[in-house]
View 1 (cartoon, helix red, strand yellow):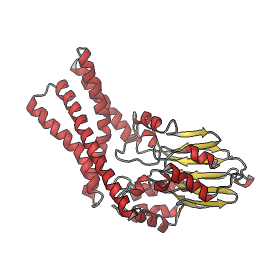
View 2: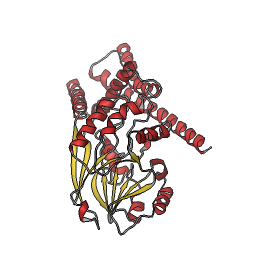
View 3: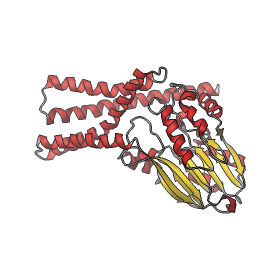
View 4: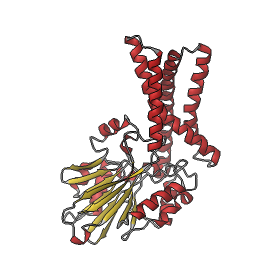
Length: 372
């Protein structure tokens, strides 16, 4: 009964998402259409064709989101990737359009200025696409209270928001596995959204290279919100099949260091999250690391005695200017190493992304933590 209710709520949420995004896309494309027809002095007939073309490109992404959940082949992947790239570029085309249209209300703006704005949008989008192919290694040092000497100098790799699916496939999984192994970590943490949410392509096939992740003390996984799309047991069973330990509201102690992992859905409710940490019975006299996909309810983790929380989810906005939105949503804890009272928090921008394979104002990163 609970599973059926969960699926119903998810279906309603997805339906609401598609309706809201579709309405927004219509409005956004209309503004872009107005700017294009004004700048290039296009006649109404050709203008209508352009508007339909814009809606087709944007609608293609929404359509591919639905189709790729059930079918996986080279044709679907081609349309999905190109539609996703356009959606990323549309952000800057829209901003350019708004600037131009707003300026024409107050000033006499030459068409060449509009052309310059659109050219700027294309250049930024191209930069975002090329930058999105680069993975940086973010190196940080963290000191934990009461940490045993044997842990000093130990290395931890954190990878979140990999989003394996129609864009990031087995080759991407192989790439990040090689990067992680080259760092010779003692622990590897995979912090949720390993998958994009679809069961196509086959979850095991695209994640199989992760079987080769090496570490001296283990590889651990916690779920993210995208593991909740569809049947989460398929993703969890696949992760376990890869030899990765799933921490679903569990605590594992290794040589005096407590590693706590919480399930995304269970910990998404503040009251439930508090209950989970209470039931786990964290020893506040020993250092602890909490793996939690989303950086919310930090006060609960701090009160439970957590020394360090590591999260992802925000992508640091993925594309400027959305980083301002995530910073506002997560009250300044949308990216980087910060203090929340007595607890330290690191929020990663993620090693992959959802939707447009563009990065502007943020990086794809593997986090390399040295305990000091």
